[in-house]
Image: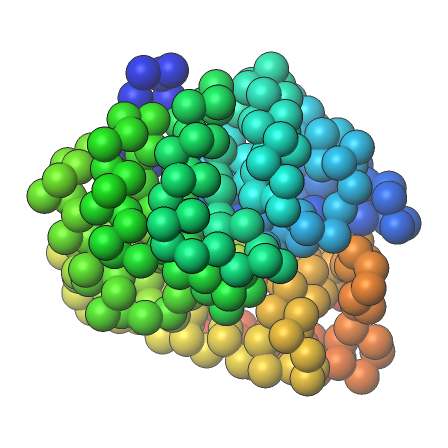
Length: 318
């Protein structure tokens, strides 16, 4: 169940971290973005998270970020909540983007730790305490230590629970022990939502008391992730396991390529192969070239029998 009032916000289920479809360096693939949003919504997701890691937000101009916020909010038209990433190296830019998101109809904002200069935990706690007072929307914190170099340590979060406008944490650390300790914060804030990033950990995170997943693979296959989540919630263990096996098999696409950006490249490549949107990456990254693209294509074709076994169809591949 989701609430999007200005006074309270909670979310559960599958909330894909949406890619940002591009045609050129600073040009949105507008039609592709519209197709993508409708494709994801048709899969039964609980919300959309734009301008996160998978959305390549740090590589996008402020102008394009605003254009994308307006586009997505306009297409969604309040059918589900829209969460907007506002992480930045500059405090005022994060606040400015949050205000624009509010004007555009977004429902919440998402903030990771400022990157480049690693903040100490005292500094980080003070930073969040200051910024949350400036934000016009509910705030979800985003733990992404592999890219920002800083964790939201549990002790710091215990201090931040006092801020009523903070509504939860999305964790992409991949550390299940950390996630277990994170969920224990519900004793202090029963209203907080706890979402997991790494898609293969979805079921384990739910078992620990998590509320859902912010899973990149749900850009292309929202029904797969929604089905897995629903099966677990309905206590259909066999069905949940069958869905999870498909999700685990899907992870092979992320092994294509040799750079850290391969996770986003693979996701955009799949969307391109499915004819949903262009696969251009924000500079300095390149999309997959024909050899890697064909590897992804072959992996998807191998998945067809698995999808068939759980009653999901794989759209025609290019």
